[in-house]
Amino acid sequence: MVNKYIYFNEKKNHVLFIQRVGISLGLILSMSKVTAASFDINDDWKFETNTSLSIGQSWSTQNADGTLLYKPDALSIGKEGSGIDINGDNGRANFEKGDAVSQIIKGLTEVRLNGQQQGAVISAKYWYDHAYETGKGDFITFDDSTWPRLVKFKGIDLWDAYIWKNFNFENAKSLDLKLGKHALSWGKSQFFQNGLNSVSAFDYAAMNRPGGEVKERIIPVEMFSFIAGLSDKLKVEGFYQFKFRPSVIDGCGTFFEVSDVFAENCGPLLIGGPGFTTDQAINGPLDFTVARLPSEYAKNSGQYGIAIKQIIPSLNNAELGAYYANYHSRILHFDGVVVSEPGAQNYHTARIVSVYPQDIEMYGLSLTGKVGKTAIFSELNYKPNMPLHFNSTDIVYAQALYDDTPLTAAGDTLKLGERINGFARVPVTQFTLGAANTIPNVLGASALSLVGELGINHISDVGNYHFGRSGAFGRSGLSTGAYDPSKLETYCITPKTGQLSDKEVQDLNEKYCNDKGFFEEWSFGYRLRGALSYNDLLAQTTVSPSLMFRHDVKGYGPNFQEGQMAISAGVSATYQKKYVTELSYTNFFGSNEFSTLDDRDFASLAFKLNF
Image 1 (cartoon, one colour):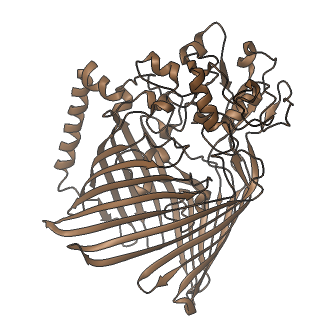
Image 2 (tube, helix red, strand yellow):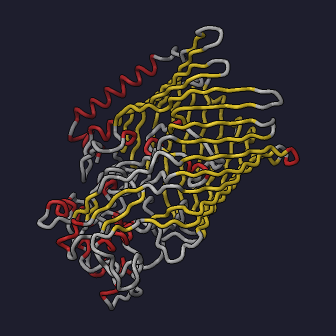
Image 3 (cartoon, helix red, strand yellow):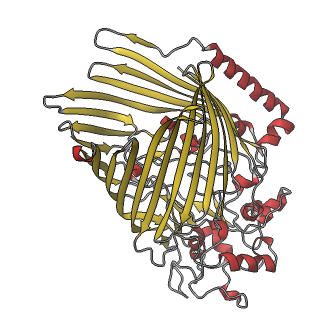
């Protein structure tokens, strides 16, 4: 638990953080007269700098859901738990209600050299998270020593580094070129992933930190890109990437972790056995760890795309776009290697390896325009060979030579030492449709901004594949027969698992030993956001309260979990367009039986300076 460690057990660390906060705020306030550097080198060249600094903190606002805490580990630290997943709860076990889950000081500085028709851009981001860098979790110690740089608790990273050149020709023709490390923004969706924006890698860890900036969302990639204006109504865009860069997610043991194993360089995967704790699985007389092999990253070549965009005057100057891209998966998948010999004493001979499936094809269409004063944006994309991941627990059981997993025919096992593909490629279609409008003079505000977006996923040939569903709910229904409480051989969760009583095991089997919660052919949901702008409440200050709502209406898929809801309420105050204060609270709730989000409510406060 970060909070107890900082505020009670190690008061000097609390004092140190307060001192750093005071120094940082003092520096920010002392910069009241600092502006972005900008001066002319000569008649043709101009030098500019822009910097954003912020300091912020996030808190957990609720205790962990005991049904998602692995019971033996929970008991070992004095907490209540009835969960069965030894590989999915470190981020929960480490925190309690009121704990600080981030205390960050960060910044991003950009330098531009601009000419009349050419220039260069270089930027760097830097950060320090005191909560993780000096804190200790309730269950495990925070250790980022082997993690990718962007996920570490402190660091500096070269963000942009590119040159650009623009050409203007007769008859409204133009050509804009970029070469180097820069971000690519494809697609029209504002809220949903897995669309045309799949060609970009995302920094999810940065967006989960207090004070996250839009510029931090997409990870710049080394590439060549162009926009060619063929007329005032027709243009062609394209790119070729020279380096593969994956998305980054929060590390294991942190508040927003996906699992104890999923993020790069986390693990090993553990076999809980008949109620072993994490320590016993690693250090007991039998080795119940599954080691992680070196990651198999995608190749640097083979990532490219092209788009054609046409303005249609007869549709109120709507823009229609057509896209094609070939890219590599930004999100890792796991393959497994089967044990070398049967028996529990040989579980440690199994292996896992993270892979990034290559050469995913994507075809897409987009349409943007206006109906009256309302802006409309939509996109449709089709991926004929999109990789979707199997249920992770099914893979582990197959590695251990169980003959009742959906990865083999009923009664069959995999071969000793065989490698298992952790995913299958299937056709996936995604459609999104959104609208945005600004209404003046609402509730005393100068304007009310509204945005809404609907998303739909369709998975072809989903068949008997068991994609998705967290390992926290055990494996899927057995291939050898439906769960029958009178027959031990039909149990997905065997008696004595995780030190649970027979009644607890039976209840869990009745609830989860089935094919529910896995990806379905159809799934859909929507997102809403509203924000008011008050320009006259305080002198030279714009105050903006906002509200965002998530609702996954039906089905399970790449973007949706049926019944999952979330609401985020916030308020920001911007003084002189330079100083910003942001306060927000996010609550996850709903009727999703397979939610791993409902105990992740949090609040954030951040102070920013832009100059």
